[in-house]
Image (cartoon, rainbow, N blue to C red):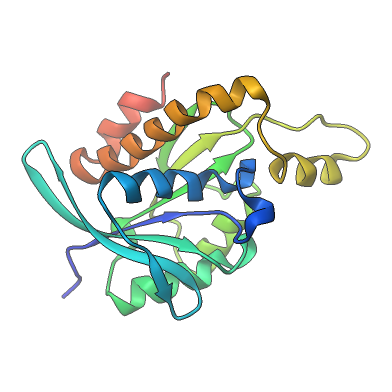
Length: 199
């Protein structure tokens, strides 16, 4: 009997040097949700910070786990698979929040399945869960300059911080990301897609 819990996973890299970087958008949205629903995170098997909460929206009450893998991005799947197996949460009850360079800053796209789009955290989760049929909230961070040194540019970009204008917009963007997660869980994927994908 699968559990009726949802699992929300914010992707990022642990440690202070990564705080506030583009690649940690998932962590930042998870922090907003933790604050919003009074979730306290503690260690899960050294793989993630994990907490339990109850979401009460539009007359619907939903129990959920909130996780921030501490395994570094490329091994995020280990944490997700461990929590999903331990609490018996099926892939269709998992929502992963991550940065996406294919979207302009402040754009949000909600999807389920599909390609990892070069995102190592998503590749790792696809491998560990042996499916890509979970929901994803993609937080746009815009793209590095392409050129001769594309890989290094990309790495520096996702591990870089936000400019002053973007920092001003960030709280609202993160709140929108948290709203998108809630909408996927409470109203379903297609409603969330209608609401966020066309903006």
